[in-house]
Image (cartoon, rainbow, N blue to C red; front, side):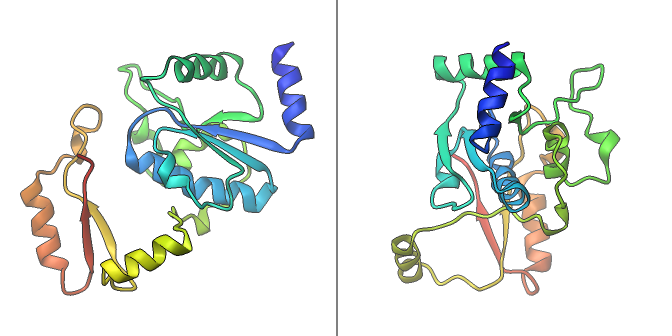
Length: 196
């Protein structure tokens, strides 16, 4: 009964809620690109629950942006409600597919971009050919950055450390990442980032 009432209300108000629990910066950034595709296709008022709110500041494709993290009792409660009822208009940006060993079944979806894989349970007809994660800055921020940094127009970002706890295959070692950067620095403008 609650599921039907909430889904009906969200449909009437043209609201789509998407959430992502966890601290993975890359997954949060992917979510920024997915929300743009959803908005462009369906014109929903998109509400995002995420653990890194700053990624969604100044994003005109987002109607509301809320913090969502493990340390908050309310966030954990809301997450359990979302997961239990499996709403039509409230979706987790995570495929939820797991192999018998409990690890996400990425190996079964080798031809999908990770953003498309995380979107499998959204049940939306989205064209991923123009997918691009984006961070938007205010005019004031842009002016500050222009004065503070001299960045090339085209560049690539690398995070030279991987997440050992979940996807150890992404942990190449700092020196190996540095070797890639050194070998390609004439063709690619690299910006190195990391979460402390």
